[in-house]
Image (cartoon, rainbow, N blue to C red; front, side, top):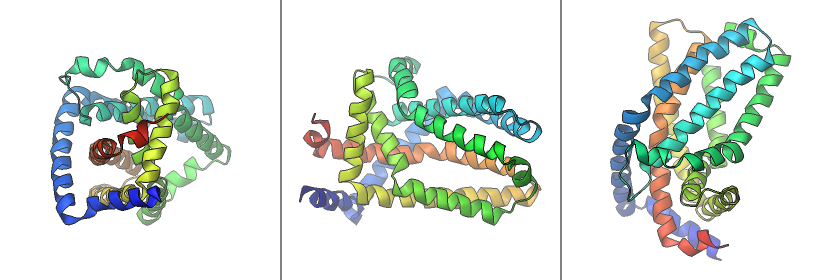
Length: 275
């Protein structure tokens, strides 16, 4: 069965001889991505974090779903722009990666934002926020909480995202879509190709997802412990720090899955581009 054969081939990346080369190439890509992306787009993280105080201020002082949903919508758009530009920074390209290179993909981004991942993410988040507002949880969770409960919630969330290959599929989908003409129809084709790549490489992607999330949670927990040791923080401040850690860790996850994508697309090109 070809599926099992593909799984076996993907797991060969974990062999010491292959893993060393894969790791070194990825580390180089990570360094390049950090340098390139932050040179052009560091203000995006600043703007993203400036929306966080506004979000909590409205959450704790008003029950206006409209105001909070607008702030949350802005956060998601900025986050998606960060993710998309990081993908462009790490992917292979014959073009020189100047600001003009990133701007040249604006059509792809608009379609990707409106018709792709963004609508699913925004819809799900707004529904959750609306339910929280209805039962009045924001005030209570901000006034009484502990780090262990917060961390356990983040661990469970990370495990779920790992099992469904959230970051891997998002990366594969975006990479496939960027390599198309950028039409609406290409979104569906790219989505199917991303699912196919996830399906035929599930064991390796699952393993890598677990490793990356574990590394992220360890680093984030350490930073939170250090921060809380100096300042008595409320939940919204902890969440802000957690989000910053998540944004800063994104290039690492994206670089690993992008390099894997490049390798598997080369090895199994006909499997992923059929139809």
